[in-house]
Amino acid sequence: MKATGYLLTAGAVAALVVVALIWSFSQRPSPVAATQSPSATPTASTPTPTASAAASAPTQPSAPATGVITGRIGYPSEFAPPLTAYAISVNDPNVWYSTNTPFFGSFTRPTPSPTPSFAATWPPEGQGMYQLSVPAGTYYVVGYNNDTGLPKDLPVGYTEWAMKCSSSDPAQPPPPAGPCPYPRTLVPVTVAAGQTVRFIDLVDWAFQGGAFPPRPTPR
Image (spheres, rainbow, N blue to C red):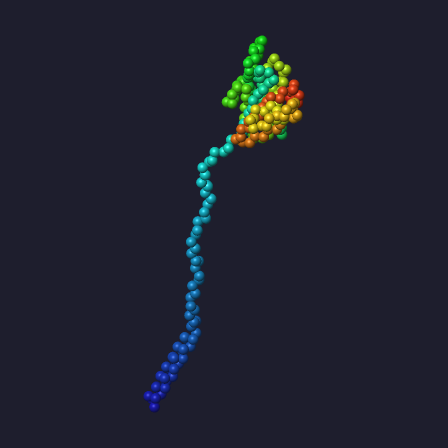
């Protein structure tokens, strides 16, 4: 009997121990799975292209900014007096370009003409011609006498009369028979950059009936 009591006591103690262990395990916090915080996804940095100096293209030669007006000088005699030829802007008479030409012809003066105070030379086209280098535009072409033996500043111009009845242009039709019927009014001359406009003849003098502006004031 005594042994049985010990066995019962020992079994009760063992049962209490098992219950205590179960209770202690039930009180432990259940393990939480560690969650890995998302890490920043590495991104490849693409370098932003910076504007670089554009490769300079070969510079093309630009067209000349000026053109040329040229023609012959005529006077109703065996000579042509020294004069200054002007290209006067149609849009602004204060804008003009000029060149000087010397005496031309076979006439022998009783007294020599005074040498002008400005240089007077013939253009590459030759004697009896004038040549004006001007910016592209539209001009009236007028000349003014520099010979002291003639009326001061006597003008000559490129007029419709000169163009139709006294032109040196071989492509111009022959003038009509009899007196020239065309007016002696100035004809605008248009020249483009790089262009040479020929046969703009200064042959229509004011005393023949033309009406021209006064000589431009020196700039």
